[in-house]
Amino acid sequence: MRQALGKGIDALISKVNSDEAKKEALQKISINKIKPNRYQPRKIFKDESLEELSQSIKKDGLIQPITVCSVGNGSYELIAGERRWRASKLAGVKQIDAIVRKNLSNEQNLALSLIENLQREDLNAIDEGLGYKRLMEEFNVNQSEIAKYCNKSKSAVSNTLRLLDLDDDIKKAVQSELISEGHARALLSIGDAAKRKEAYYLIISDKWSVREVENYVRNNSPKRENKKSKVSKINKTPEIIEYESNLEKYLGTKVEIQSGDSPESGKIIIKYCSLDDFDRIYNILSK
Image 1 (cartoon, rainbow, N blue to C red):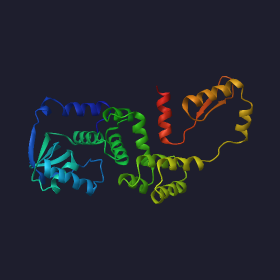
Image 2: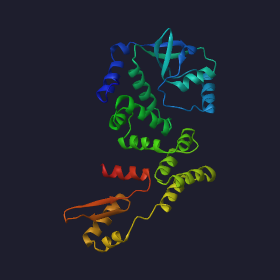
Image 3: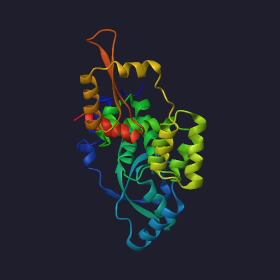
Image 4: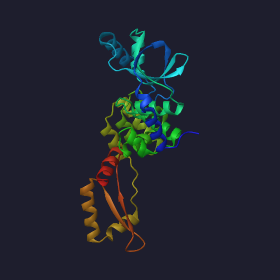
């Protein structure tokens, strides 16, 4: 059984950071005795970037040590620093500086490796989302706790997880940096699969900006307004119309107030045209 969330991860992290763990010191380890981490969220390592780092290591050495755990028989598994480890191998390094975590369970290894790698700023959005998903599945972690441990807002975690609903080829394009995270967010708001693919191909062929994709979304959104909604607009009181206008100015988007079955009930509809727009409105409302 995997440890349950919240207290589960708290317990794992606090145990690893206990007094026993603090005794761990920097060691030099044979680079060939280290293997990649099973829980590494990053799936693609760019050859050009690794070569640049390799040349830097040849010139100035490894500035930041990697982190590993012992897996027995003198072998080690990476927790954090796979890119540095790969570049060091390219540079011909025989021994590498490493902080060794001792006596880690599989659960502790998973939690540490995911959290340490997810806190890196250069992780692409799809790999980041896959890491979040792994934490949720392995530890029953909720989005609020992921946000806490990864120093993100809950809405940022939620929006990153939504990107995993994209088509596989679009996700791979984000992982390989063929398109940006902003492009992916805009594509996600296109409900029709054929139109989403069309926009994706135009991003590639015509080098569309994120703004151009958002304009495409607006121009291809289905018109949902029917005769009933038009009649309801006509029947709105001046006060309701003024409330709508004030909310639209405050939120910077279209707002519609609809009356319910009784004078005391109804609903407020706030429209957004992209996930970035959703984030902006959410941040205004949550203040």
